[in-house]
Amino acid sequence: MPETPAVLTLRVLKAEQMGELLGDEVWDRAVFAAVKRETLEWVLRYLLYAADVNVQDLDVVVTKLNLPETERTFMTAAEQLIERGIQRGIQQGRSEGRSEGLLAGRLEAHRRSVLAVLESRFGEIPRAVYDRISDLSSEARLMEMLRAASRSNSLAEFSANCLE
Image 1: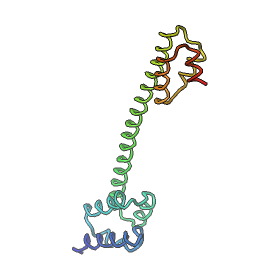
Image 2 (image 1 turned 90 degrees about the vertical axis):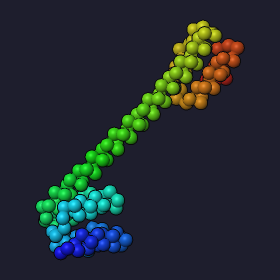
Image 3 (image 1 turned 60 degrees about the vertical axis):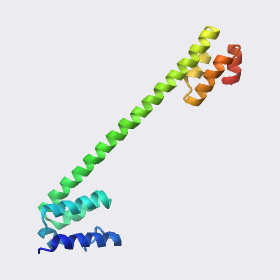
Image 4 (image 1 turned 45 degrees about the vertical axis):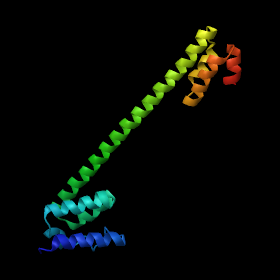
């Protein structure tokens, strides 16, 4: 069956338009038995990556064909998809972790700056003021407080304007 790769490709594309990628039109055992491994890989990767077919649903259809080569090829493609997802998740986690770490560092620096200005201008800072500033998690609010700390005439004035 020399036209088998073309037949399979056309069936996949037609089935995709009709929303029937897992239908019998595509999953003809004779066609899958006749195609080369490269064609199987192309079809399975297309279904998994481009067409976004559910891996478990595709596994059911491939298993029903009862063709060991097709099952092995599917497992390889599925494993690659899973590995790709894991790598993306790791990268995203690293990126989010860096962003969160940078934000946490900036917040801590802003908190320390506010506290340092207050301490240098007014002496020892009451625990309640220290705790309120330490609990803040808004960069904008901490920057406002830093400006207020440098302009306030007393700790009481700062507290009245910024902490109440």
